[in-house]
Amino acid sequence: MATVQCFIVGADREDGCRRLLAGIAQPVSRATVSVASLSALGGDPRFLQAARPLVLVGDMPAEPVTAAEVVAFAQEQRGHAFTVYVADTIAPDDYKQLVRSGAAEWIQWGSAAQELHDLAARLHGADLVERTARIVSFLPSKGGVGNTTLVVEAASCLAGRLKRGGGRIAVLDLNLQGGTLADILDLEPRFDIGEVMGRPERLDEQLIGVFTSRHSDRLDVFASPARRIGPEEIDPQIVFAFIDSISTRYELILFDLPQHWLSWTDSLIKGSDAVVLTGSTNVPALRKLTGKLAYLKEMGVPENRIATVLNGAEVDLLGRVARRAEIERVLNGQRCLFVRRDGAAVDEAADVGRPLSETAPSSRIGRDVRALADWIEAATGRLAGTEPQAAATGAAA
Image (tube, rainbow, N blue to C red; front, top):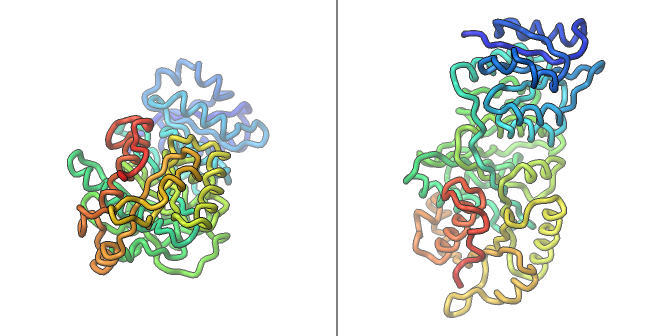
């Protein structure tokens, strides 16, 4: 492997961490340059004239550089350099911002040599590019609202549209104790997070391939087999690292979030490009939904990036959603989509392990799912290339 130019940031040339970074960089770097700070590096002619350099920033107690400073630098230098933050730990929010910059990564001291070698190998000979996947989180307002079914149906519908323009979509089932997503599609769940818990260095391209359940040439599924594992046992940094690892492979990644709020659910939602909040139309369910909707807004999720989807809606003899005006008043103008109840179509799809977009594309529920897919396209700007303001505000009456 050809070597790259490396810049090591730190004020004290004799600092132990600095020397350790230099040793880690030696196998991949043809020239290692030490600089006092990130701000000094930004004005250094050697850095500005270097071709695709690596910047190493260590968590050095004597001269600390915060993860936020690294993120800001990486965003500023995107397209020119790739920045690596070396630290034993990092806050989930900082990690999310770091990797989503498309020009930075976090590695741990204990595995830094191998990880830096692998990173340099991936970067060499290829342009530094921003991660391409857009993230859509499906968040259930309560249990039993069909969140997983809606994820599957939306993904299948969107994947069908991608056949015209290329690309692929992934669904990540984050019910890591064993969800039902793979069962709906009659797939073997292969995303066994136990394989990398405590051993993040195993998360490479080969293992990602092992974790992938292929539904079609445009749709992949990552779903966990049933296993006894407590939420506190799941290292969120492993989850974030996995998401980062697959993000360059897909146009869209849809998250099937669990009903129970985890310590890292907030970070997943904040890192999403759009959020689909799912619920149902009875009064207790609407109360749950409005409570979570208020929380999303308190978190700072923009209103035009949130869609509420009310599943299993009752209809009148003409096929119109019952109590629609009343429900929309309760939601106080929030964008709302309705997916009508169609038990026979849902049961038929479940029996054959195929999505409704394949078994009953012209059904009422199929049309409602297409309205949801339209909104996702517009909210993410990924497939249709439109702005979220152009999204549909509801399914057809």
